[in-house]
Amino acid sequence: MRRIGVLLTFGLLAGLVSTELLLRALGRLNHPLFEADPQYEYLMRPDQDVRYGRIHYVTNALGLRSPPIGPKRGRRVLIIGDSVINGGQQTTQDSLATEQAARRTGVELINLSAGSWGTENAMAWIRAHGLMQADALIIVLSSHDAYDRMTFEPVVGHHPSYPAERPQLALSAELDRWTHRRRDRRAVSDRTFASGWRALRDTAVVRGLQLTVVLHPELGELAMGRYDVRGARILDSLTTWNVAVVTTIDRMDSAMYTDRIHLNDRGQAALADVLVEVIDRSTPANTFGHDPSSPTR
Image (cartoon, rainbow, N blue to C red):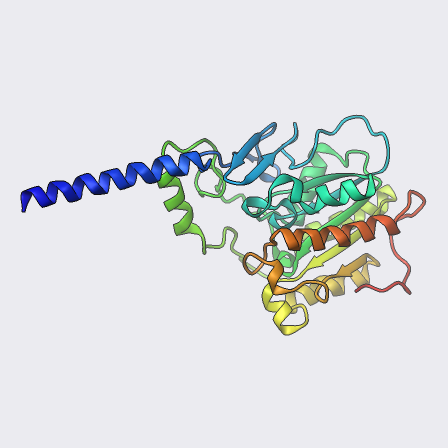
């Protein structure tokens, strides 16, 4: 019996070591790192070029999942969003909707996003860093972002999706991420409409920039065939403020999703189609607002 116990212990240890080596070979120690920020909560660490499994992450000097931002040479559009437009662990760099749309239009697109960001995070970032000489703004967010407000909950270095440093063991990091997989990072404490929506609209008005909101549907909304009450609140507010809206609920299907919110490569390609259409409709002569006769779907 003692010999059996020794063999079982040896087998377990060998299995754990093999699993750790396999995870390391797959790049599972190379999760992109994050930094906390006192103004906009957090963002990915600048100047990263890592491969987490098949997912290639690149961040520029500002911590954005975009190419380096140099002197402006042509049209430039700031794309604001959360993990949908950021791509996260679902999307490698070249497959991001912003990367695809930039290649197709020749327009420089700056991907201003991070997982679980809302309009208040983006507006705080813009107050800190400016608009990067953008000619237009596009917001890609979902119904749940109606009430997504900054809380400055300490997540960097505390939540496995927001590591501040490389883990020592890939296996423990994977187990930690698995236990947190179904937990929402940001809890909504009240039903106060996020102030960033109006702040971004007002910024566009003051700067004379065209603003377009792409309202990304969740899987439950696809099943209902309409946005939920939170999405309706966003749409009502944007209509009141005369903001151009593109609703994509009729253009997406469940096969484009990896979960209830995030997109696979096919979904990113469909989102890229939307971005291309929005960019092609806008010209440098356009100002904030939209033609009331133009369709919103």
